[in-house]
Image (cartoon, rainbow, N blue to C red; front, side, top):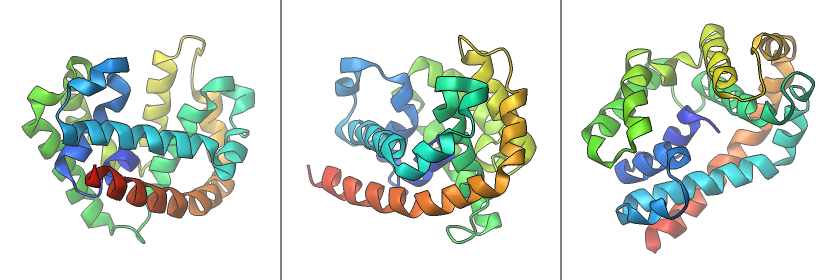
Length: 197
């Protein structure tokens, strides 16, 4: 799952949101230096990632991208899931997705001192370019794909994988529909356990 899904699967708990969003920027034992609520968000993020990677639907859908991007297929699949979540009016209506994105940026900005330096530097771009809301658009997906390719050590471009995204759009939408209810239920249950600790 990418940024939108991790934000959404924080279930509007501010500290969980912070941890869930910064997890990929927190290495090793650094996680234990955060306040308990944020640490629980970091932990939830990692549980969600493990669940996503192991899910049958995700494993099958990633195969569509493997010829173009090999082992990076999972990173591109995470963006695809965010795309379909951003369009999912069974979860939130379109106007509310915009409000949700604004709320996330506001909560993260208010906790600036808790953010790792790299994430803190990225947050103004995320907010100004409204990444969370713009996943709904093909151009938002293309831009995210380009970002992955730019950071990847062994990828020259994301053009081919974006073409595969368009070509297999219906199959990928079906994969999202078969996966997201499972990860949402999983995340809700795991969060309930974490909050009791």
